[in-house]
Image 1 (cartoon, helix red, strand yellow):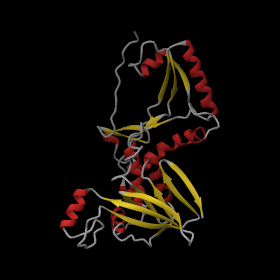
Image 2: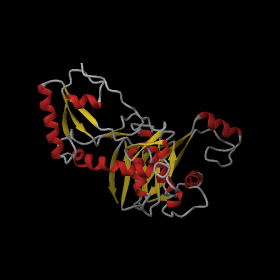
Image 3: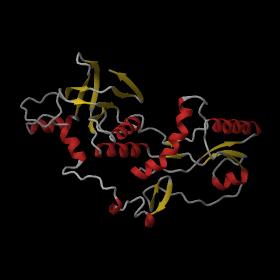
Image 4: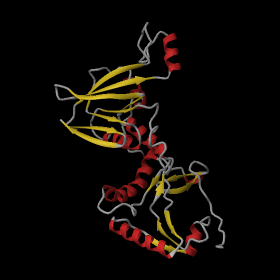
Length: 308
């Protein structure tokens, strides 16, 4: 039986935080995880909070509103695209059918940031996994969602499984993954003492890590909105058509919780904030236009490009 080793398990937000993949004790967070405001880049201030601007815009949007880009789905893919497009001078709208961002597949995701050694060489995943992995530390320094670079182990309990480790090691090299190595039993149990005693070796990928998926998506969405992207939740896309003028028209059904609708009805207001005597509908249909050389539609994790 391998000896037992005590180990310290840090928890993000408890006596410290993960920043750029590494642990920072609470007393060292000032100036790192908690930035020094005096060293900001001098971003222009706004009279109104950007998030309030996005919320207020939702009450004035009408069927004639034109956006350069509409992103459908506010999971980790949609919010990542929104954040990236917020760097440009575009009128961008991010819509989500649920009542908050990250409520679909993102919420149930394992949160593992893979190193890329197990992807089939030549595949799209193999091409982008390692470069994407290497982007996470800097992304976390910018957004502070608690990325933890804790590494990963693929363990072997027999000589036959050792051959699999060699295959994964070679696949990782082909995919461009750095820092991979096969460790033996003594070092393995120093890293992880709760393993099956029969484990004899492991493929160690120190650059693998994990995130809290919904914290990741929320951080991306908040930063996108801070930079001018408009966010609409409870908007279900029902149709996308190409108009005669070349614009894509996106039809959406807006829904609200029934309790909210009932309260608004008692106040004599519709769910979009306007005065109304007849408030019997839970949903309202919106029609928005997209006018852009390559309109981007994100649905169920797929990015589709429709050239006008």
